[in-house]
Image (tube, rainbow, N blue to C red):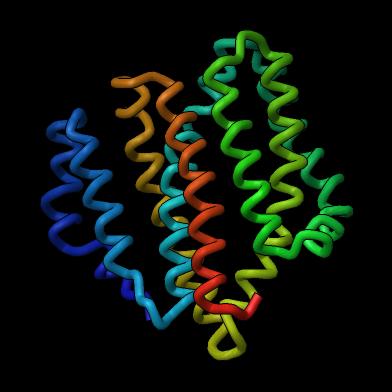
Length: 226
């Protein structure tokens, strides 16, 4: 059972988090503290709980970029271009999701997650080198395809690890943890961007994609159900 009080911890709430507002440049200690409390939740005998930890850490890094991405796009195009960019990734993902089961059937869910995570690593890293809005459009289309393939494979893994007991309760804890992680990422995103620029966000998310694929592969090998 995941205990959110262990993740948040009163020490974090009353000491570390207020320090963010007093000294916003001290983002390193906040990020380290958050990661530490997530890692404290790892339980070798509870694979779904470990999946919650892995996903929460990935969503934390995803949350770093999400609030800043539209601002980043505004450096390359108009408000209309920003809307088109989001439309590209969403509509591409919606279309290719219709055919994504074939990849999971061919490689298996776990290998599919690992392969796509490697591609997402390179795709995300490419944002560091873009010079115009058309390159961003291309990367958004690629992202839509890759997420369309990875998400159903991941859902299959998540369903198996969740098992049949207290499924609703487990998914409620999952949703609570990942949304909490996204919020922390969003809280830190502005500070990291101001100190290190947008490129740092893409580099962090790129490596988190790679670590995510490897972590899911290792976790499923331990469980041996998928």
